[in-house]
Image 1 (cartoon, helix red, strand yellow):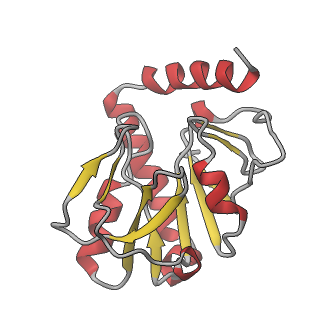
Image 2 (cartoon, rainbow, N blue to C red; image 1 turned 180 degrees about the vertical axis):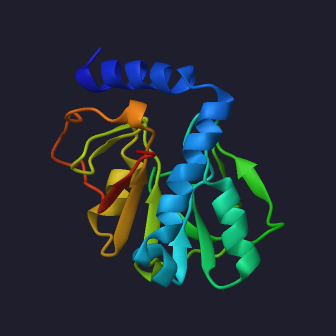
Length: 181
């Protein structure tokens, strides 16, 4: 196994070791910090993500944001070429589960330019304080971030933070890292 695979396995076990109650409490704190950012408060178009079981749960913030009807909410869709497309999302829109077990909008949903997004919320397996992330190895978010010109916010639990994420030339840093501490 290479260094990224070893780190991925280790951090996923640590993340899974958090109890559901701990994960929800920590997720709530992270979401409160996110919602208090000027970049979030001032954003009109926000790219959320649909969390996997042990990821930072941003679903309650997504629902609150939709309910207020002050912002446009978007979700990523993983395309066949392994690039992320930006799709609008509203309460009641049908989502499907892709081959990575991630809930995403239907292929028939309109595609928006990522440059229309004011703030992108990014998940990770592991992260470092410089904003670099380790995902599941497909490079989807690195390709998304490569020419994304606005604010990107990386969400992680403290157990996911490492001194330095192993990096390759294509790896992209995010603008801001938020944890529960």
